[in-house]
Image 1 (cartoon, helix red, strand yellow):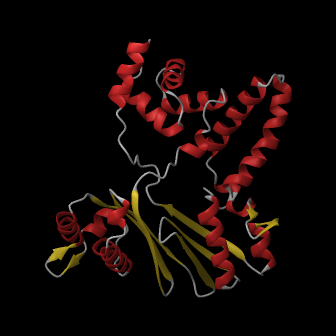
Image 2 (cartoon, rainbow, N blue to C red):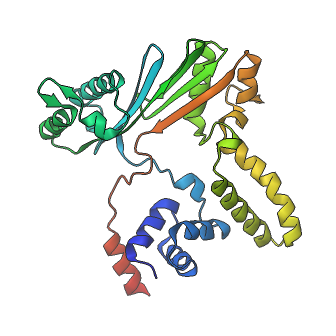
Image 3 (tube, helix red, strand yellow):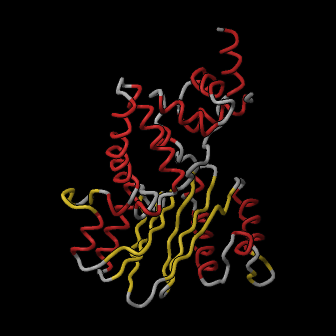
Length: 291
C-alpha cells in the first residue's frame, strides 16, 4: 500500500500526473523506484531527466590552491538572497576556510573554529541577519599531482560548477572539458564507473519499451545493447560528443591534445531539492471531488 506522500514524491521526481502516479504505485506495491520505471516503460515520464530537478536557489563556488581544489554549494530560499552581498561574501569566506582545513565532512566543516566562533555560529548569525534559511549543503575537495592540471568552470555566476583533473593537457583544454561537464551533465566519467544496478535497471526499461512497441522478446533483447550504447553516450563524459566539435568525443578531444581525463566533479544548485511548495492537499481534494 502507498501513502499520499508517496504520490507527491513520485510526481516531483517524474512530472507525471497524479492519477498516473497512483496507478504506478498500485501496480508496483508502493515501491517508488519501481513506479518510476513503470511510468517510463509506459512512456508517461522520462524520469532519468526529471530526477535531478534543479529546484533551490544559491551558489556553487570553486577555488583552487596549489594542488587542491574545492567546490561547495550553499543554498538560500530566494534568488534575491543568493545575490545579496552578505550571502556571497559568506560563501567566499566559507570556501576559503574549508579549503584550508582538514575537514572531510559537513559536520567537521561546520565545527571549524574562527576565533571564539565556529563556522556554524557564523552561519546562524547570517540567517538571523538576512531573515531567510541558508544551508551549507555540500562540498567536495579534489587533489592533483604536479603533472596534472585543474579545469574549472562556473555557469551563470555559480548555478552550476565543475572541476576536472586532467593529465598531459593545458589548463585551457581542461577548462573546455569542465564546460562540457557543466553543460551536458554527465553522471560518470566512463561506462565502467556506471553502477551495475543502474545499467540493469536501464536495460529492463529499454526492453519493456521495445516490447511495448510490438517487437518480440528475442528482438527486444538484441535492441537493448544498441540503446544501452546510446545511454552511455548521454551519461558518460568521455563518450559524449564534444560541444565545440561534435565530430569527436570528449575522450578523443583530450587524447588529441596529448592527455587524458583523470576525474570530474559537477554540482548544480538545488539539484534534487524541491523549490516551491505546491498546494498538494487542495489538488487531492479536487481529484476526490471530481472522481
